[in-house]
Image (cartoon, rainbow, N blue to C red; front, side):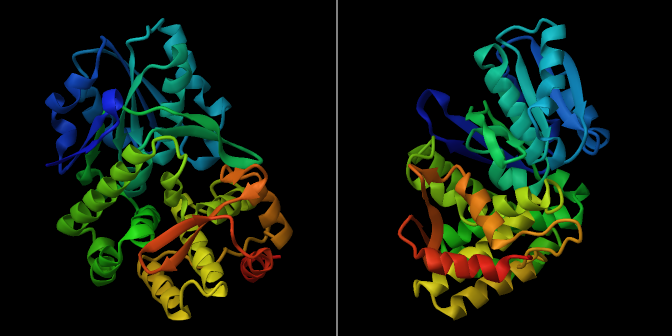
Length: 364
């Protein structure tokens, strides 16, 4: 087992990464302060891992909330069953919520923990690659709104993260690829060496080879832990973690939540960021080609999918991006690239070049 730490003073917490650690009560016991636990999962994950989670917390008064599966349910109304359970059982401020599932469950459970009695503890048990390498770490919690993704939420750090890599064995191939998008992101923002490693080991990751997955998860979590420790509330360099996300969130919202998985939208968004960086002369076309090749090796899309019911025009892209969290004082900030493995946060881009990129990727 590997243990990493997110260093945030009194809010610091460990990330446990290993095979079959969902059986180890001693890992979570120090992070449950009271006698009450609520495990939140969904209809896909609960049949697979709820019994193990219940055994993990068998020494506590434990309730469960099983939510429907999918990004479309990540709404304010969607968290009400969690709040209802807490209220109906009269759970106090020492209750611990447990998020058992992927990024959607983690975000919703974390947000419920942030607002119940003005903040209670929660533990992350991520069961998807995307959640293990990204969304379970860093304390971003929230829900979606029809006009924008993750626009309602709070920074609320977990007590610990328990990433059992054995749960990835039950992950379908599409979800595995979605998680690889976030892994690729860490390479693009600050590590050419990791990019080269991914290029050489992508087939091993696709084949779920344990050593390759363990290294990719450890690298990604350590990178995110370091960035979050330096900038917990995204006032500066933490925004680098949004590479591909401003474009990707527009795609998710524009097509309708759930039509395109978050990781798939981020993959397309990273290609769009590379495209705009090429237009500015900040990276060479050959670098963009390397990025596209790696994303394709991860079995991820590089273009916005054609949907017969919904399309995204350049105007829609601009409207959705204008409502993004990275807009400050009316100015859109983007994460772009100035080298392979080196990204920057900037508002100093040519709007006409942005229009050209959006036009190239728009489906209407």
